[in-house]
Image (cartoon, rainbow, N blue to C red; front, side, top):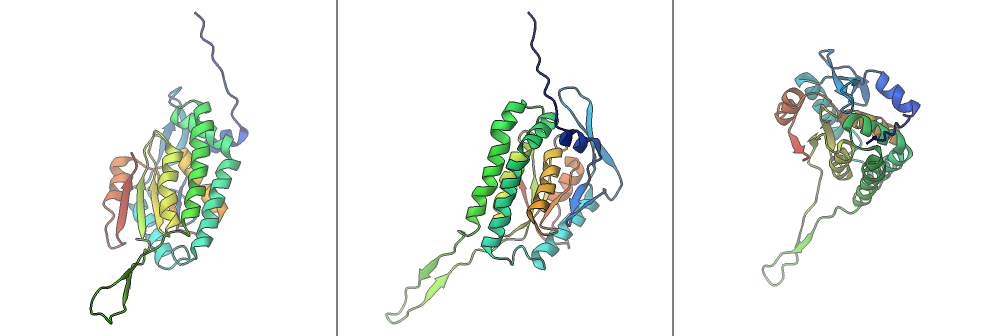
Length: 253
């Protein structure tokens, strides 16, 4: 029995994106890896090399953590108002929707999932996640607690929720863009800065998301994206509690 095959024409923007070696995002700049090495991202449908990507290592993770720590301690992100953060995060969602077809095609090529699924699930859910978390930015509140004691004591204790600092986020291959959104959205909404390591099998939409974050107005160093292998870049992120500063590592699964 004959098998029908549908070939989808890829947008020029996608073709052009994968044609150039992809760099890593550190401190608001697209840079080569410290070693100068790259690694291939494969099209799982054909086993052909889809793109060459900068290969992060320990030095690159350390540079990214230093940038994120500086952006947290001295930069505007943790100090700007929650509503200002919310507006930038909301714009990220709008831009994901704007570039939705490009992102869907890129996700399908790099991940191997059907283009239809990327169009109806991965991309719109990622956009809505950022919009949802934009709303939370102004709704993170503490508690006020009456203190019991002597009859005339009229005191209150209060809690103040503050960002913890730099979050290290390691993203798997199965929902590359959506899981990056799941990790980035909450951390950014509360004022944290981020070092994100996408899966080596599927780094391309995370790197494209980095361009979208900058277009949305994300300040330098707030989000740093370091592609690379788990045993090098990923392991470095897990052990980045160094003189650079504490890194709270999150692994999506």
